[in-house]
Amino acid sequence: MAQPDEVIHQQTRLKIMATLRAIPEREWIEFTRLRAIVETSDGNLGSHIAMLESAGYITVAKDFIGKRPRTRIRLTRTGRTAFTKHVEFLRTIIDTATTHGP
Amino acid sequence: MDPAQDAAVALRDIEAAEARSATLWGYQRSAPQFLLWGVLWVVGYGLNDVYPAYGHAIWAAIVPIGAAAGFASLRGAGHPIGWRYGAVAATLAAFCVAVCFVLWPIGGKQIAAVISLMVATAYVLAGIWRGPRYIVTGLVIAALTLLGFFLLRQHFFLWMAVVGGAALILAGIWLKRV
Image (cartoon, rainbow over all chains, first blue to last red; front, top):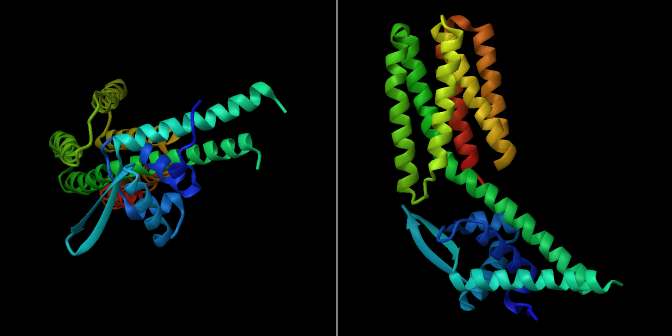
């Protein structure tokens, strides 16, 4: 049976992963755009990004556009696979509950 | 919370985040095209206003320049260019040409209005699938075109250069925003 992914399961990280999965593979998303979609603070988003990065689910790139610092994030292949499995797990829970009923 | 209910909420969150992400990504990707065509409208309609007799020649130069620059900007940004984009543009162009032939004899300002309305319609149709900002842009372009054509016919080209071009540029800036 499919298992929950404890790294992805948390609500903000789930939204981050969903946001990243919706853009084409190998495309980056800027930190500010990701923050607006996930609707959280800089600090909160930063800590969740660090956790996902340490799990190998995302890649973070930092550079400068002129003098302005820019942070970009994208999903790794491992992250994409893990997220797909987690979604399967969620669907399995619902299917099981529907099959067995209350 | 019941695990099944918890899972259903999580799936709804995923769906919402994916939809918002895909829409904003589409906006971001298309923004440079709006900016480009906004500038080209300013130049094209501006020249059309100054040299009304050379409208065909002006747009025969502007449209290929815009198409080439648009493809180059997408390629430069590393975005894949599907054949469908080219096919949609070619279909719209062919439709505009066919409409003009059917309505012939037709004046330069009428041709310009038909093409601008066609572009506006394409934005609205795209918006129905891809996001409300395209719908708003299409409706604004259509309204400005009709306003200029019926109320300011004498200065229609200048109107489209200044107001129509500016509307497209503003749409591009808006689409770039989160």
